[in-house]
Figure (spheres, rainbow, N blue to C red):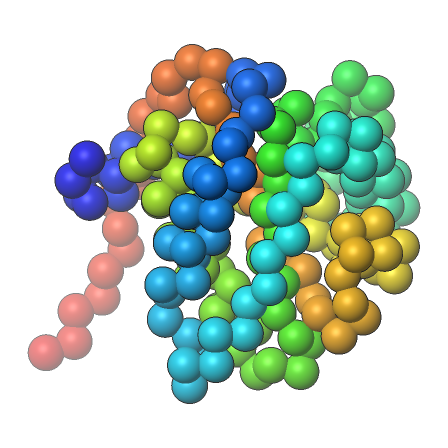
Length: 186
């Protein structure tokens, strides 16, 4: 698959088959992620891969409860409260794997570095026939002491990019893009 095809076709996926992903493929995704540039070439990232269904269910449940208590000012609050309050809503859409990209809290460009690694990972996944979605609903809870303990993350690390990975149940549909707002300065 050509790079331009991957860039133009990759979309966040929210419908996964239950098929487990071989460890080798997950390792290839991490290898693609670490090819990303980082500020001062620090390469600060740390990867936690969760494949335990019971733990994924717990993180989903606890993240939803945490978001309901802490996110009163978020845009679309009523919509999100209804979604997060539903027992049927699983924040990971029952994907078989979660990759949490983290970095030391003291690193100045931690979010940027992890976001670059995350984009590489998601593009590589698409090229391998896998679907991904960055799950912001999990991010806050994973950053708590309880969340870090649940995934064995050191207190020194900050989770930045929780990304689910799995085989798509169906094809991802194209999402129309708005024309960019460009300001030219010559």
